Length: 344
Image (cartoon, rainbow, N blue to C red; front, side):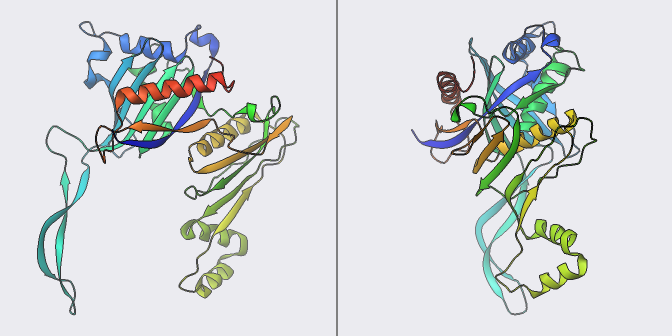
């Protein structure tokens, strides 16, 4: 059987413990899927497990296969988009005139809608909820935020097993065992690697508490289109345009962006920093190092995640074998518990 490697990401479900009344995310998911419409439970109603992302582009998330493993709840989420088109090459060649000087033999390129009664899948997430721990594998356009949005809808709107006002997060957990003891509150974070370049915006917060803070997000390289606004902000439009015009055919602008936040700590800024940490945790190619109040993690990856092999249904498949993913995610969970990285 063919195999492929994917990154397994870890998140911890965090919410108001009093509002949850002792229930874990696992038990909440099980309770939600057990809710009945009077004739059948949600497990048996796939049409009622479809979440409209409501972002204006027609995206929907289907909770397709979902299983109670007794010790966990495991499911497969599929991301689809309304009126989606797939580009296709018609392999019957034809001769076409492409310019006054060029007549070429080419394959026709067109776009097709999905056959009636089906939808193209643009992203997948295989997720496991065990206690308040979440492990998942994602592909293509699926993101951890979409997983969180789906669970938010499932627990609130679809099943009403929690109060609609309840706020919860799926937070990245740093591996504190890589250093001697607990490193304490995170002060600095550094990212380096070959991950896709991004620019992280960190908005200033109102100063409320007098706690000195210095945080850095470094080694983030922006492509040309991202670098130009930064260069203009630093040097002004005129000097920036002059620099751009001077570039040779093999040259381009790259910006190493370093962001520091100084001042008095606030609850809002603490939440924002956690959100940034979560974003960085999704960059599977990046190496993340952190510094805390009482220690540092300098070597290795400070984000809790690991790469695992998964079975494919057949050679070249974009899907993963459902039962095998369930086994592998449980294996990762057991390994993290055994190593003391998380608590069962």
